[in-house]
Length: 437
Image (cartoon, rainbow, N blue to C red; front, top):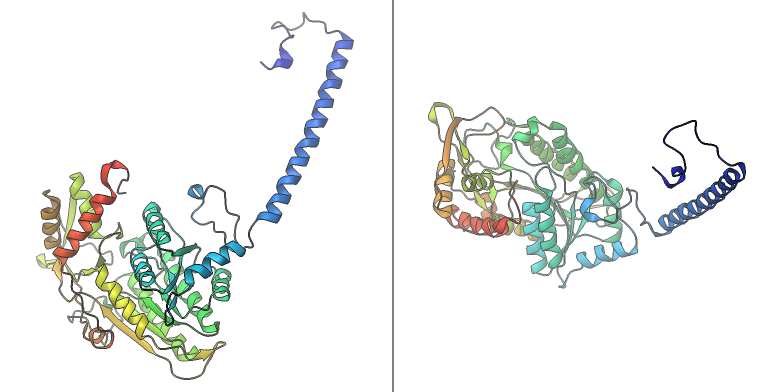
């Protein structure tokens, strides 16, 4: 019961209110209500003025004060302080240093490449939308790692054309390392539109902004070994046919290669595509087999070991992250300048594609055996037939082209690489502070 109702008896019909007392209360009530309404209006006006003058210049939604609660699809950018951070992160520390925009910088490969570029004195600006395809807290941890080394990651989407244009207005990037993409083969069966949105529309947006930039940057971007699809000739060579994709993911990466060819031909953009072969290592992706095998072995859960038709072996050309980084940096360093200006081609431009693999396919069953030894836990194996979900039986890279033109030479075998991964995994998820989702 409120304080206004204290004098009213619980039994109705037996109470007579004095007129003078009643009127005094009515006058007091309306006087208080008027004051409350007036000051509420003043407060509301003040909040509007504060928001109007303090909010950053942006085409996006306002940024909530608590970053940890912010929506994954709500971004805020712009303003003098923001531009200052963008410039500082992109500034080179050496005369011939590169200024690189790294998309997907909070991703597995993006984090390692950004850190490597920064270590050698290049300017690096990251861009990532921190989506929830896998645990965003892992991406945030990578972001914190990069920020400690001086790399600022702009939170935004490659489909935000206004943001991309603004970044190129603020910084004259010499190179773009385009890694942002919807990854994973099996997820395409659940959310196919996300692959078209990121891997095709997003790539076109990047190329559109780059073609109009003056000067145009050179672009290195991540394709995938998945483009070889149902190809049965091994090892896979860049000259092999890639017109039989086994998954939508592979189809979007193949489409990306054709789109890259078009922008090179019409606008003179220097473009290098890198076909990665099953990259693994510390800070890796939780949706990759080696990662969730480790998690499930430690939890005592059964892990699926796929078997091809007629009991065929499923094998992958596992490539350690440090080797991939060396190949990516070599691609950036050997990329020739784009030849266009103001969206118009001035002459022929460089167009390349390379395999970046380890050249030593390993059966998935052997991967599990190595993890068992490193974790000192026996895995509960469940051998099942390979489902028709886009996976292929094997991958095997011919890297002779990358060796010749990039000086690419992988040096880490699976045993050594997994040992480094397991050490990181146990350290990152120790003492129950973090849980592998």
